[in-house]
Every structure is written in C-alpha cells, then in structure tokens.
Length: 116
Image (cartoon, rainbow, N blue to C red; front, side):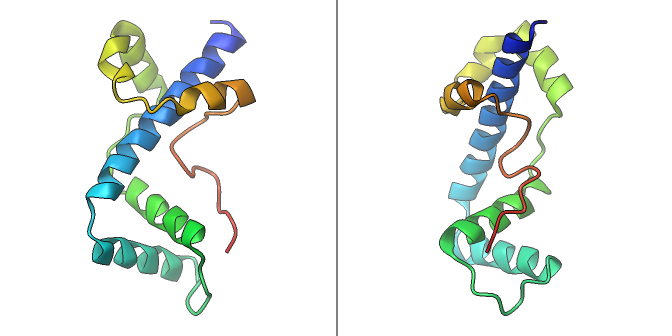
C-alpha cells in the first residue's frame, strides 16, 4: 500500500474512532461527564487546577476511551477494506482534513496530554 493510501486509511480510522466516542459522549448526562472529568483529573494529579472547557472535554474523552471498545488500526483496516460502506456511514468527514494534514494515527486525543 502506498503512503498516501495509508495516510487516508489512518485518517478514516481516526474519524471513525472519534465518531464512536462522540456518540457515547453525547449520550451521557452532564453529571456523568463531570464525574469522568473528575476521575481523570485525579488520575493525572490535577486536583485543584482550574480546567477550561476544552481541557475538560479532553479529560472526559480520555476516560471514555478506556471503556468504549474500539478496534486497533490493523483490525479496523482489514474490516474496512473488505466492506468500506459498513464504516463510511459512521465517518464524520474529519478524515479529509486529517489526510490533508498527514495525521490520523488513532482515536481522538491519543497521545495528547494537552494543556490545562
């Protein structure tokens, strides 16, 4: 597989994972989201730190990734290549931007510990 095709597949994978996490995130109550933020903040020793909205979303997303079953890239790639239409309907379209930037290595927030 050429590098460009691999970049596009990785971007689609990141888009798919983001869509799955977004669906779960939006189904949660405000109270549950706050609990996730607090749990992850404690885990990262951020107690007492004032967190902005973006940082709170990152913390909640990181915590969700622990409980939302997502396939690894190689598993997803095999499934996607055999039946792309099964996955395309879940893509948010973010993959186009990620592919143009050469990004898309994993689920939302992966490897990003962000800032406060």
